[in-house]
Amino acid sequence: MKQFPVATINPAALRHNLSRVRQLAPDSRVMSVIKADAYGHGVLTAAEALTDSDAFAVARLSEGVLLREHGIEKPIVLLEGVNSEADFITAARYDLSPLIHLHTQIQLLQRIKLPKPLQFNWLMVDSGMHRLGISPEQATAALSLLQSSQNIQGEIGLMSHFANSDLVGDPRNEAQLETMLALKQQTVLPLCMANSAAVLSYPQSHKDWVRPGLMLYGI
Ligand SMILES: *Cc1c(COP(=O)(O)O)cnc(C)c1O
Image 1 (tube, helix red, strand yellow):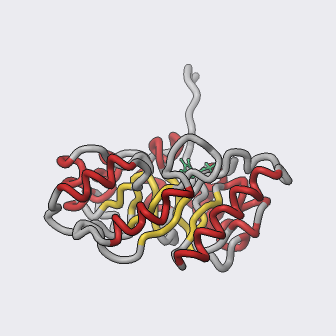
Image 2: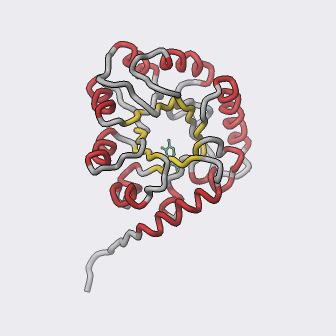
């Protein structure tokens, strides 16, 4: 008799859940969130099952390096970003994309010279969650600093996170989306906002990219 619980991970179920994301957000690209060891399911198992993703997002540099060392070639965003020259260099070497969410990260990028420029870059804008990001008022200035940096290559995307997307109809969701849509219109940059709850219940927020985590794991 087994004395402990056993979890069986079925990669086909992960793939099925990703296909549901595609059905719900047919016009958006999908950045599959596989942070925290794919919410405990195993980051490599998840990355290999979710090959139909357009990109992946993890929290940390070490998770991104692990994926690259196992041959995962899709773009990988580091949601926590990085905060030292050494970590920026590692990110560049492994073609990882640290999220820019602090002014100090922008200042650091202006000061250093990476071995090669970072690609697939995203600026986190704090449209109302008040956890992470540059304020909407400072976003365009931050973007121009980044766009003129020799360490940044290609288009920079706009990212933001809903504070309350679980609450369907919460007016704060609409206010956040409006803030980001104004910024998108002004900058003509791609927007990535919707987490799982917003993929499921807030289609107006899908836009260029969606960023589901929980629903990939059947929650
Ligand atoms: C965890 C996370 C997500 C995924 O959210 P879910 O609610 O799990 O779909 C998206 N974006 C960011 C920045 C996250 O940290």
